[in-house]
Image (tube, rainbow, N blue to C red; front, side, top):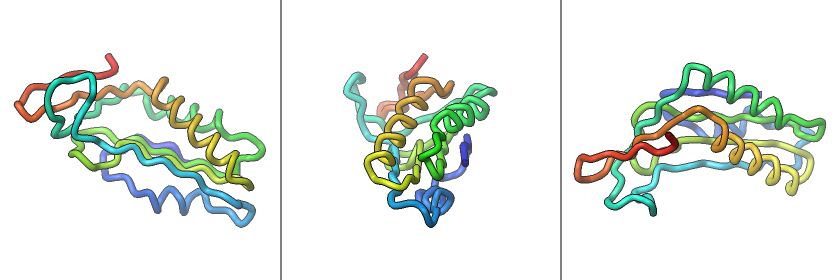
Length: 136
């Protein structure tokens, strides 16, 4: 299991390699990207600044461990902090299981739980130089 809060760019292949297992029939992945807009905000987004609570690493590890059932062969999830440009990955998750339906289900539940529970906040930087905090 891998669960990391990092400042460096996230690599999907790294995550896939770390959940690979000869028993796996499926690896489901998710890559959350910084987009150039937020439907709830006026203006074009040019970047995000992610800030994590000091306990974020422990929380992410707890979330990943909770997703590890007997049928899950591997989990790797990382969330990035610091400044990210449009198009960069903010979160990457990979889950391996024997069958695809379960891999998809576990990966989706993992990402949704991270989004709901991880103490990470983002500041959207807009083209006009202003910013908006999200998740506070």
